[in-house]
Structures are given as C-alpha cells and as structure tokens.
Image 1 (cartoon, helix red, strand yellow):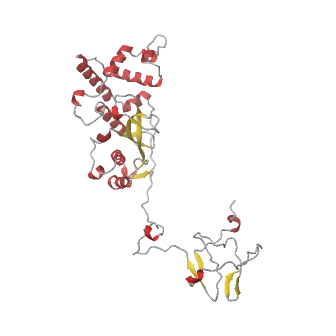
Image 2: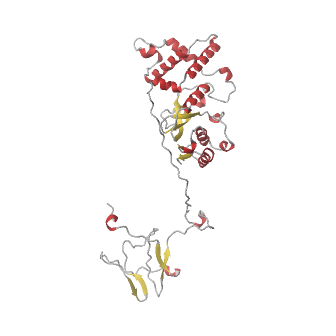
Image 3: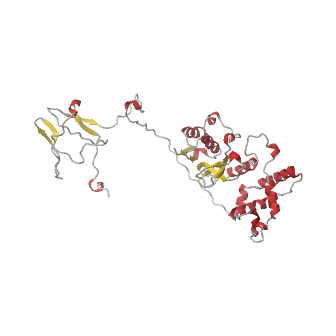
Length: 373
C-alpha cells in the first residue's frame, strides 16, 4: 500500500540554494556535525562565528543528483549569502533551436505539437439471412468462370501434347478439385493407397478412377503456353487464375483495420528454382511467398506474388513510389485497393516500416499506418 494515501505526497519544488559567489562552492564539509537521529528533530539554520549553514539534514533533504528539489549545504567562511536558482528546463525561445547538437553536451529537447485527432470507426456487419453450405462459400471464391477456364486450357494443353484433347468438362474439374481437398485432409502414404483394395478410401475412390485422376494431374493447365513466351512474369502459367481469385477477394467487404504481411504457400519441390523461398518463422518454411493485405475479420482482401525483380511488372508505380524500397512498394500497392482509405489504418512489421512509407501513405493515399521499428 502506498503510504502517500495516509500522509500525502511531499511537495516538490524545482529550486536549489547555491552560493551567490561561484568561488564559494569549494566548501569543507569535515566540520559538519553528525545528523541527529531524533525523529522529532527539525533542522534549524544556525549562526556560528559568521558561518551560515544547516546544522543537520533529514534523509529527504540529503543532496541528490535528481531533477527534484535539491538543497546545497555549504560551510561558508565570512559573510556570504545564498541565492535561489530554478532547476526548471529553459523554454524554447522563438530564435533558439530546439535540437541541441552533440558538441555542447546538452540533451535533446523535443518539440511538442498537437496532431489531428483520429478515431477508427467500428465496422458493422449484418448477419446473413441464411447460412450457406461450405460448398457455396467455396464457390464465392472459386467461381464457375474459373472452373470453365481450367477445363478449357486443360483440353488445349492435352491437344498440343497428345494431338487429341482428353475431353474433360467443368463438372469433372470440380470433382478433381474436391478429390484434392479430401486428400489434403486425409493423407495416405502414397497416391495408390486411396484405390488399393486393402486401404480403399471410398470417399475419393468412388468419385473417379485412379488412371483418370493421374491423367488430369498430368495435363491440368491454367494458361496457354504458346502465348507465354517472352513474358517477364515468372508466374505466367497461373496468372489468369490468380487474377480471377484476387478479383473475388476484393469483392469481400473489409473492416477499417488492415494488416500487411508475408504468407507462404507450402512447396518443397525443386522445379521452381529461385521462386521457392525460405522463411524460418513461418509454419510452412519452404514455398512460394505472397504479400497479402488482410482485415481484422481475418479474411485476405488483396494479394501480390513475390518473384524478385519482376514483382511489380504489371503495377503502375509513380516516380515517388519507384524510389521506395521493396517493402514500402508492397504496402503502397496493396493499400491502393482499400475502399475507404481515409477511415482506415494499416499495420505492418519492421520489414516494411520506413519513414518514407508512412509519409507516402498519409500524403498520397490518406491511409493512417502503424509500423514496428
């Protein structure tokens, strides 16, 4: 318990008693009597042979180097007077600089200015009238257009390779995707185990024969290879599908609190070359790296695939943005799609944070930001 609640806090003053003549500061303290230990004793000022000094000191009145109340006790020889000196820091004058340089040894005094008050409005989401099935929520992101796109380019690629298409359909592509989802949840040691008579998994084996599944896995495609030659995009094989998925993510209503960070898509193969990244503090340490903007609802609203120097090949950057480092370019690119930038705040970690980024977000986009340093 704080004793100040009974006796009250000691009043503090930013003043000190120092000799009026600076030469009197070298005083001899050897003749001062020992402090009296009587708790009811109060120090009094005493005149002894023309010397003015305090006969004793309390514990609280002992000399201290802090900026609080300080009393200097000096034995003075001859008649000298004491003067009161304020220990308050001098206020800045209009002609003086508030930043003191290292040559004068004084500490830096920061200038305080009022900033504009800002409050993030709380989002209001209306609950759905009818809760849809998981398949319907999946189709909100993976639309019929994307399914038809996969079926068309799979037939096109198989015809280019075999001379005759494998004649798949959007319905069969949906079944193929459902099998991939089941395999991600129920993992068997090998692909053949799902159809083997001793370990047959009917949920997958009844959908499609093994040979047909392997044929689709061999020829599934998302873009025309003959039109991708010479493109600076290193993700050209999946770019159309990625753009359609990103379009659906942008349609989801977001809150006013956003976060930009890295997301890993797990991949341990060796055919991706330098596109495969390693981040030690991620659940999937090896894989493809994406930069994502998510809201406080936990939903990702915008994505950007990292591919080295060609990451921003299809992004229109201003001259000011081109001078920014990689992390700042990522944040400004993902924040351009925020629906209400003036009401939004975006946060990011030290990989993205820079003063130039905070300034650019505020002046160019009107987005408030919080970053770790």
